[in-house]
Image (cartoon, rainbow over all chains, first blue to last red; front, side, top):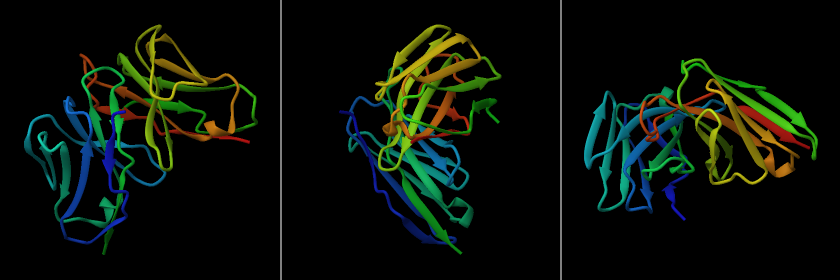
Length: 111
Length: 115
């Protein structure tokens, strides 16, 4: 059974701080890694994806991938109250229908 | 805006009744998906489609069927709804031209309550 694990939180950070969200996965053959943001009562929206080991930066967001450790993370710099949401990690194993979502980490950014 | 419309957005039904949820896209993308989201379980794939009349099962397909007779429409049917199918259902599309890699765009969701 392929699994994607996330700490459910809630993770609480003060405004302006760095929020660090973590995700581990069980399938060593996984190829692509995604972070989705989901506001309460809304649908998930894709915010970052990463395919190669290392860091990928997009504005205030940085995705980090370590395939050897089967670990992917999302850093949010200068966190804003509008970043308060549930963040879903998703891992694609290389075939159709093989996108596994974690249960999500709820982030709360306090003003 | 990913051009995805789900209907109905909310539905309350009784155990044993059939229910059909519709997903409509305006951009003619090849890959479409149905997920359900439940507390404690996250998003789980029910069925997906890779073209007209081409569908396959996902992780939690029991009790569900799908049909795709047109590129733009992907229907999810619960032949005889049960309380365990109370959930929020999301339709998603992949905009990639090749094999979908997980970059999905979701509809607004359909909240189904089975009494």
